[in-house]
Length: 89
Image 1 (spheres, helix red, strand yellow):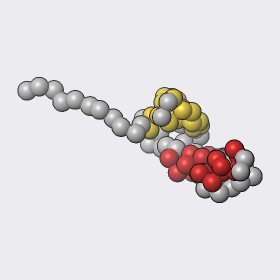
Image 2: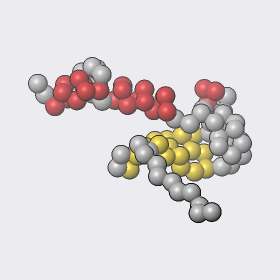
Image 3: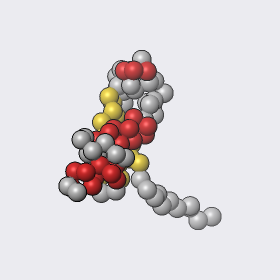
């Protein structure tokens, strides 16, 4: 078994394309669809004027977004776990 076929089995079975099909599907499923500032669609397929690109930092998935409708740009991070705090009363 080659490294490509072993990785493909983990990714869902596309032996010739390795991990790419499963990763592309995760991106389509998880990418932000609307601008957090103005709620306009980001994707051209949804009639938007934006751009969404994904990169990774450690285990976190980061979506770099730009909204052509309002000019907002920023990062949206999908993290496995988020820790917050409450103010003392």
